[in-house]
Length: 349
Image 1 (cartoon, one colour):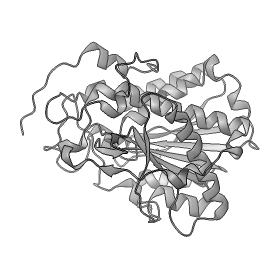
Image 2: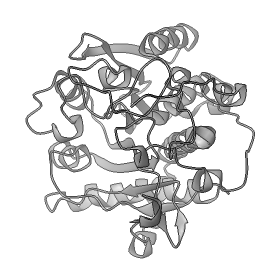
Image 3: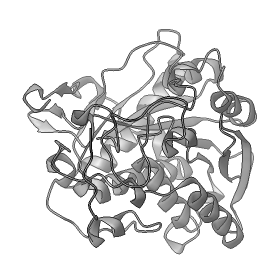
Image 4: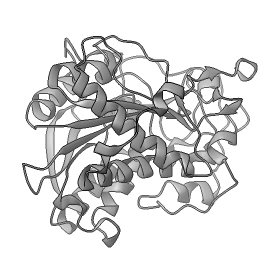
């Protein structure tokens, strides 16, 4: 398939510039209404933050932020550094882990995580790290994100300077490798983060296809707690409270529309396996649309990028604050009983 390569507008490029958390609204409910790719728009991956750009950004922020520490927890299959960003002022504080880009083509949550890291060095988040420890793995699958893999990506739809794929360089889905941990990326996560720190909460940030809906409206994203029967009652309760913080924060936004994700119970999946093995309360957040894929119907046009980045930042900020001030413990989780499970809008696929 021959792909037409055109220039993106300055507005879209600006939406993905590091630190561009403040994005001018494009239209009400832009996340839900932004168009899918459909072959009608150029998907320019060159506006995404490359791995070298991310490394330089993280090192610059570490030099500027006295509370931030940057650690390399391992290397990817192709030798790229795997980074851990740490804010650990008091080991007795509750700790949350934010994990992004297990799937390399699910990129905007990483862009949001980088904006969040920058905000932690500003007055906007002043004092929050006094009462909560924050761990961020901003990209677990750098090889997939760079399209540097040992299999063909010829059918992928994006333009720009590279493709992005769900899988790591070996063609393995990292989010199905949380039991055997054969891949270097998942092994590094378990050996040097999950086993090394006393973590209370984790949000695993992903993207899904663009055509999921609830109540007849396309969702901006969907959430889910651990669904394995082996999860403890306390961990499950904490997971549902964590999800309640996210749901309430996003639902207040005019562009936010959240559904329940129809996920499985396999413990090879991080949401389930990590909750059981480490006693960590976890939720999955599946943002709308992917940055690249071999199936055009899975890719979202870039007009909603700014809002999806904002949705990630809102998620990270709201959960960090709720854990820091203890309000997470009083969250009403009854909304889960009525939260509709998303369905696919078949007419758009």
